[in-house]
Length: 68
Image 1: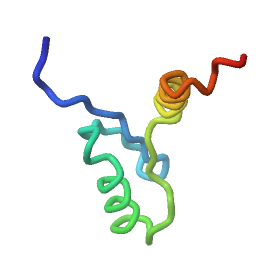
Image 2: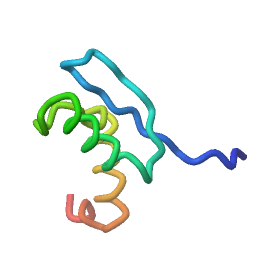
Image 3: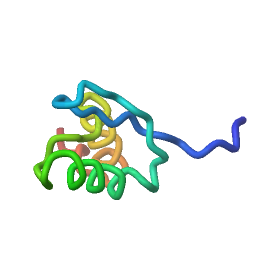
């Protein structure tokens, strides 16, 4: 088992880049990137496929999908 902190892929369509950011730094890294390179516009984001998977996991953990 790895002691390495989990990372999340962050994608910026305008820059054409994807990078992996440690989970606890994702929000700050995205905000910083967008502020420095895109005048604060929300361009960089967590990879949409990963964001959907994370949302499903969280919803399941919170019991929000129990009624389906």
